Amino acid sequence: MTNWTIDTAHSNISFSVKHMMVSKVRGSFGEYSAIVSATDLTDLSGAGVEFTIQTASIDTGNEDRDNHLRSADFFDAEAYPEITFRSTRVEKDGDDYKITGDMTIKDVTKPVTFNAEYNGKGTNPWGVDVYAFEAESKLNREDFGLTWNAALETGGVLVGKDIKIQLDLQINPAAAE
Image 1: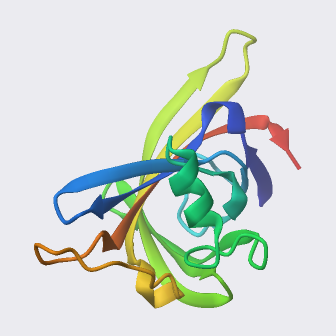
Image 2: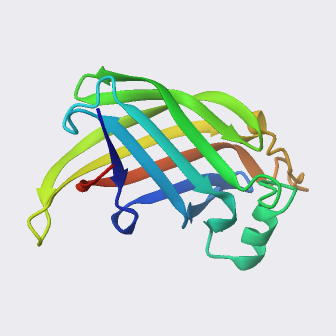
């Protein structure tokens, strides 16, 4: 197997969460890395997938909210600077994949499954083949110790429990380790 690194200039790790029970807040992380260990990037069956996210790199487009998310109320980025994922199983699911692994947030490790799709292969302007994948998962943030919330006068809470995570990854085989 070869370890392929992602092209962070053409990749994205983002999330969304319900706000006030009715709307969504979306955000992303600006600093992350990922490795896909595979013999063939067109078939991830049996591959390995790992990624690391720097929690302090969170960006929701609102500096006050981002600072709150970095605080001990949420990620506690100073004490827990990284979110990690390491696959334990990658299985073909029709034309797509189920990538199951251990995600660690704030020293809490839980199994998480991503539904992944191979988006195809292209050739960039420099003649290098690139491969693209999308992966999505949903997790309960409270399972990972992210429990801060505020009750609303009208009922409900300020921040939803379910977080949707989306990874858009481009792999450049020329960057193989």
